[in-house]
Length: 313
Ligand SMILES: Cc1cc2nc3c(=O)[nH]c(=O)nc-3n(C[C@H](O)[C@H](O)[C@H](O)COP(=O)(O)OP(=O)(O)OC[C@H]3O[C@@H](n4cnc5c(N)ncnc54)[C@H](O)[C@@H]3O)c2cc1C
Image (cartoon, rainbow, N blue to C red; front, side, top):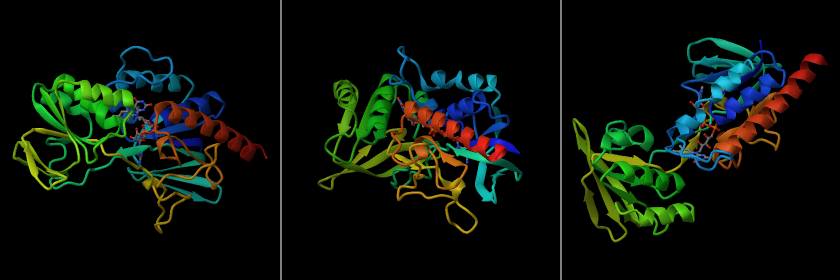
């Protein structure tokens, strides 16, 4: 029986793990389906985490986090969790390998995943020229032309990253202005090899056996532009990873809002006693590393109080 099960090993889950173990919980396991680190490991650079002043990639930034947690006793099981249920006072963690772990408390930190842009050919060519991670795949297009789809901070930051590697970046956005921060927009506008294609929507990505060869883009007056590129990077938002909270009867274990975000109070508590949610997946999350880490700490402190009270009453 675990004192606390933490699902997800991004900034929220790792911080929760450190606070839970360091705060005295004995048997704490973080279930993470891949390598710990979370989404930020896809970022080419993080410059808005307090104290991080040099040029540091997301991967480098997250590298020391797991070891720091292990030092205090956090255990890591590399497995995907399919579902979390509660029977009586006990939580059950149903894992992809068919086994079940039991826990007094659960902190869900499964974050979010990049959304598909929804144009023809995107799914078929995903991983063969269509990508949602410039840091992971940008190098394949060194010296070549690529297209980036999106208008937020992530799209523009990734366009800037690709502009350093690729000969040219076409930045396609459906509106005439960007939602990104003014500083980032300015850098994009000043980049010599980024061409803005505004008021335009991708219609179809096409290719051959080798992968993507081009993208058809429709402008607001209806004209179609054929952009011959071997790589298309989409950055159009994220979906909340809340699937593990769906029960056998299709209801959610706790409340979620219309965006799928888990509804919590300011202590990261859900209305289900002993169940907490932290990071990008919770209601109105700022979707930043610093806030995800803060949420993880708050949730762990609450879990410690909950378990102490439960076991000692
Ligand atoms: C390209 C990019 C650039 C970014 N740049 C910045 C930046 O500069 N500054 C900043 O502050 N933020 C940035 N962010 C946002 C930041 O990465 C997130 O806000 C933060 O990672 C959220 O942390 P989290 O722990 O809530 O979730 P995540 O980082 O999403 O971690 C969730 C973890 O849960 C795991 N998981 C999911 N489902 C399961 C399951 N069923 N079973 C087991 N494990 C599961 C996932 O594998 C993942 O490791 C960026 C994000 C991206 C994608």
